[in-house]
Image 1 (cartoon, rainbow, N blue to C red):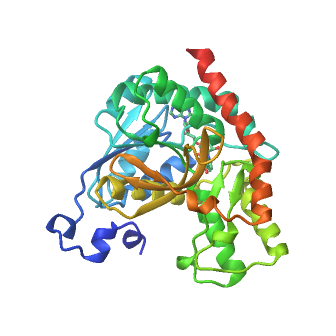
Image 2: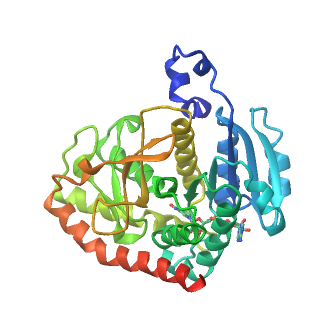
Length: 342
Ligand code: NAI
């Protein structure tokens, strides 16, 4: 079942194009931070993709065993391990998609911003290597605080002269996955049908689910909207508290990140119908970065989808205005960090 859900759309529809009868396993994907909680599960899910020919796993330690283990799965991709900074360049050579879940996760009582001091430097160093070795790759940033680490990555890529805003993504898919799950539960809908766009950023009140834009059309009471919005915004903390010091979301995150990787690969493969929410450079609001639905194509973001932000309810409009100062501050913090290093 999992395999089917990760199959390319072309494969599912039995496209008449010969090339698409069997999806070509032709893309190279690198995971940086691959021995971690997210990294291991994500690597497993990517190993199941029929579109991947090479899976490169990088970490500062413990990645050899993960790669040996995964390499026994009889799916097409070849798995290779890379340990430590001296092997990072080789890990990234000719890679199409780089996914970065490297860094420390939250413990109870911490906000995502509390991770800034450690993760900012990790993302800076990894993105510097991406710029040097595979500047044309799609870059998926998972490391928190995403609201700051994506602007850091953009600045580093600019300093290196290789910034392509269409190819830099903050992974917010988990917010959409959570919103879809919670809405389906609350309204007794078939999970597979539910799609809630989530915009803004990826921390606390900057996560704004646009429940009025839920597909299929659903009506919510004011109380349901308040409950669902708050639950979606705090869902990460729900997991952090349940894990009680052992980390934050890893399994649902890996699932969400694998969906975003698969969508990116389908777009690279020429599928003209790929949409995902992501935190990207944006002109939809007055903020330089903003999460919204985007259309993905061979060159990355083909279009931002402005329609979700039109005709918002009063509640959503108010929440959008309320999130802007916090999101702006997080973006500026990231930019200032990267500029100080230049
Ligand atoms: P983890 O601690 O289990 O794994 C992190 C891995 O990164 C470890 O294997 C570690 O060795 C590696 N690492 C550390 N420094 C590195 C470096 N310089 N280069 C390469 N690898 C390095 O943490 P987990 O749970 O996998 O979380 C990873 C990150 O993902 C955290 O920052 C967390 O906040 C974030 N996250 C993001 C979510 C999102 O929705 N975008 C959701 C959940 C977590």
